[in-house]
Length: 120
View 1 (cartoon, rainbow, N blue to C red):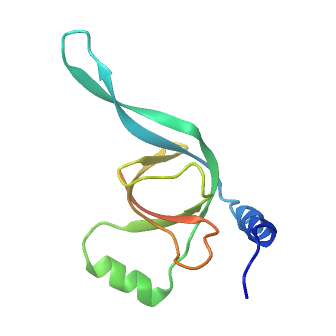
View 2 (view 1 turned 180 degrees about the vertical axis):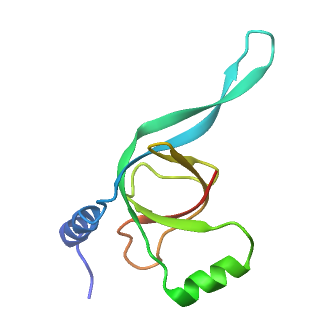
């Protein structure tokens, strides 16, 4: 059974309705000239980068396995498909900042991007 574009859009819209934890700003690192021949790195919001999000809760077993890989706690957030988040972007949620470590999209029906991030 194929899903037509109208059904897919409806499913994506319903997924966006679950992003109720608040809004976050997706920031990307950019080079800015320092007027002395060099540059500095600054964080700027991507176009359309203020988006709603949801925190994805892992099961107890998944959380235990994730914490065995290191001492850093990994957070998973569901974001709308656009704008696309990239590894090394930042998510700013109020006064809390997370660095994106990876972005996953399922291989079947893509309804949202799942972003793994660490608190910095």
